[in-house]
Image 1 (cartoon, one colour):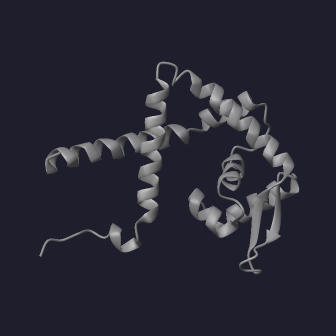
Image 2: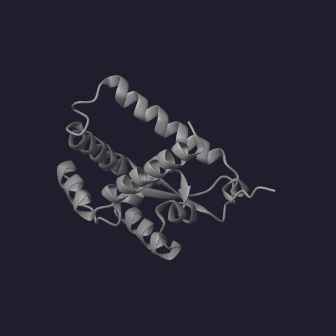
Length: 162
């Protein structure tokens, strides 16, 4: 692919990712998902619960970074999830000063219900996709994420020609 065509393709990819994130973050979609799952949970709490499911055990600082939220806010919200019995807090085996959040069995039931509801709600969007297409999307997205994770901070610095 030529340099110009590659730039255009990467710009279109970025636009698609921004569109996808915007769709995923719509509060109305969260409301529909929670209703479909039969879950009564504050809309601000459920992405944290899902984050704990995906990345846990996880400290509040890392969870706040991943959620793009303030540490103090996330700390209060994680405490609320613990009060509700959806997560448990435990000292990190690596750093005893850090309390990690892990799903409790009640939290697992909620995230399982959310996963099942998400599957039902997305089934229509993928109805015309072949199994191969769906697998290819998964493979390519995972490859992109893994390649980004493998990059060092200096890899994000703009490159200048000498």
